[in-house]
Image (cartoon, rainbow, N blue to C red):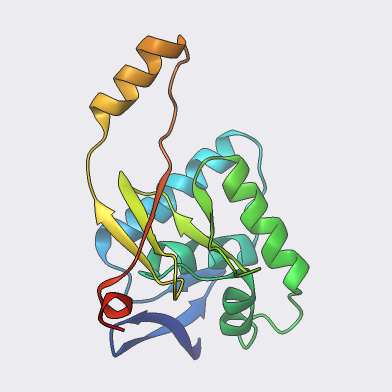
Length: 172
C-alpha cells in the first residue's frame, strides 16, 4: 500500500489517498465513489478500456470541487503515476468529454481550458475579469423539454456557462 497526498482539496482540507490493487482509495464521499463506479461501468459497457490513469483522472475530477486544468491534474497525479504524460491526461479527458461525463470551460482572456465533472445539473458561472468559476446548482428539466420541443432533438445532456463579474471583482 503506497500512501500519497493528493490535490482533492476541499477548502483547506487535504484528503489523504492511497493506491491499492489498481484502485484509488481515498476519502471520496460515498456518492462520489458511486458516481466513479457508475461512469466506469458505463465506459466498460461501451468497450472503453479502464486504465489506472483513466480511473485516477476520473476520480480526481469527481472529487474536485474546483474546475482544474489538464496541467493541474497532471501535476497533482504525477507523483503517483511518474510514467504518465500530459498527453495521457488530455487523452483521458477527451474520452470523458466524448462520453458526456466531463465538460470544457473556456475563460475569456485565458488560453487554459478548465474541466468540470457533469455529475448533476448545474450552471458554471465565470467571472469575465478574474476568470473565477463557480457552480450554481439548478435543475433545468423545463429548459430541456423546451429545447426538445422546439428542435425535435432528443436532449441527452445540458451544459450551460453564464458569464458575469464575481463579487470580489465588483468591489474593485
